[in-house]
Image (cartoon, rainbow, N blue to C red):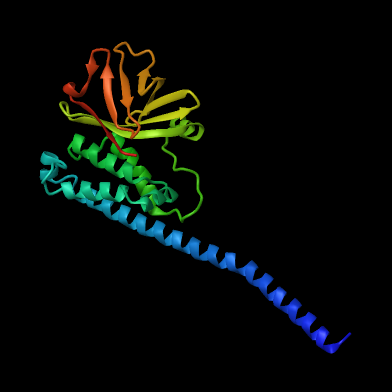
Length: 246
């Protein structure tokens, strides 16, 4: 074979091999960078969560908080504003990797407003979830944190979450977290203060509580804003309101 031709063939083969090797290595490098970047974002979000959680624990027993709660213009309203602002940040969704949600921290804050800083079944449930997440658990694709209630954990496993709210009565100063799950045409609501479930029938934007003698139902718009009703009408005048938390 002509030496010049042989040299040309060797050069082409070498160049092709280099290109192939480069193509193989490049996505691996990019994948590693993206993974590191995600971990940093998760840790940053979790640090913010822990800071806000620590602040809440620091003032929940103070006399002014028990009296005014998160009242607008009060010294603690800034905390609630920071939580809600953080909830609008897409990175807050990364907290799922740690087994917590920023909306759950908001629910805990509202629960302390209702109880005037005292521990209830609701606050104990959230505090256990948060403390478990903070105490250990490296970042990984883990199973969701157990609530301690088998039926509720099974519901979360089998059904898709529709939405989360805090249902409060401003007259009697009580509140509880409420969630609705769906699977096909089935809808189930659950109160997290006692894990009581209720089967719901969906008619348009209304979700009727099956078997409820008062004709209670929830009206939920496309943005997941909820209003409570019974057969006599809107329950807002009786002090009931629902605050979307997720």
